[in-house]
Image (cartoon, rainbow, N blue to C red; front, top):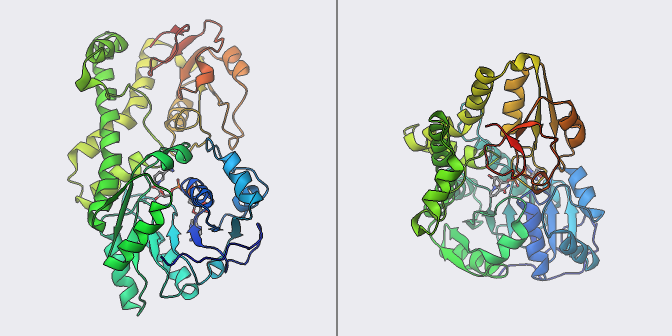
Length: 413
Ligand SMILES: NC(=O)c1ccc[n+]([C@@H]2O[C@H](COP(=O)([O-])OP(=O)(O)OC[C@H]3O[C@@H](n4cnc5c(N)ncnc54)[C@H](O)[C@@H]3O)[C@@H](O)[C@H]2O)c1
């Protein structure tokens, strides 16, 4: 293994030369749990990220966002001098594998922005040696790993390339990295061998496949999940239009019926990954991914359907609507691509006023405390099923609860 062996650099040092491994994008949602998994395995990690504020936060022993179970690991890593923090490509250091966990968005045409990966790698190349394995961890467009290998060859570089996708659920990476198999793939036998040795340090099980298989596996995992949510959301809307109780229907479908055990409930299906990855796959399939597009139509359409139904049933132009939960899923603070905001923007065009609250989100100046939202709203909509809402006193106000989450509330929809 080519993991560098010196582990003596002080925490907070900007010198990356003594890190065993570098995680580019190491202060992000995927980066942080991965960094801490490697420090727990005894490695010294260079946390390389353009976001200097997030690096400062980490260096001070805090997390820039909610990552369950990460705080004690961060404290241990800092205490053991296992972390280096660097913010520029020239601080990568010429030893140890380099794992890339940067964001890989789609553009306004829902096409992947492959240039992000190229820009990142091109900036790193002058500062890494040919012996260093480059491991893509970000979710990439199919063919990107082989493309990167070709790109390097054209530049006269000899670096091995691997693709080992991240599949943890956001906010719970620490737990899932310990429990879940890691997919490992690489463009050569040597690169594959090295990637296996690296991920063996942190994973209970490895699945070794070719890069194109790993790329598809990651995208199929996410697109399938997105389609599953869409199936439930579509059934929900059909049941609603018939005036039937979808929660009762789900109980009938699932109770002691093993084939429906994993069928998800309805809800706002959003966030930075499922939609985006389904669209990466659609772009790869020349937009002939009917199931994926149908899932987008249903999942994104659910909130619009909700607004339409409310408009028909109530004079919402005279009403204040309160939104409970602005994060894209429960128990986290991440608002990226949250459908709560789509709902907010849509309602702003037709309601008298829209108020928002969330117990975790700290990045939205419009958010007000729950009791104010409850007090001042005519109708509440549960957008994110944070556990604290389960027992919250909603003062008997009418509530929309697509999730079927609230037990003692005045649910009207
Ligand atoms: N969030 C998840 O739970 C999750 C799960 C599985 C896979 N993924 C995939 O992982 C990738 C990263 O997602 P994320 O949610 O962690 O994104 P993120 O925005 O939270 O983190 C990316 C980090 O990369 C940094 N960065 C960007 N360009 C850089 C560069 N050139 N050099 C150094 N740092 C750079 C950013 O500052 C940021 O801190 C995406 O491809 C995503 O689809 C995410």
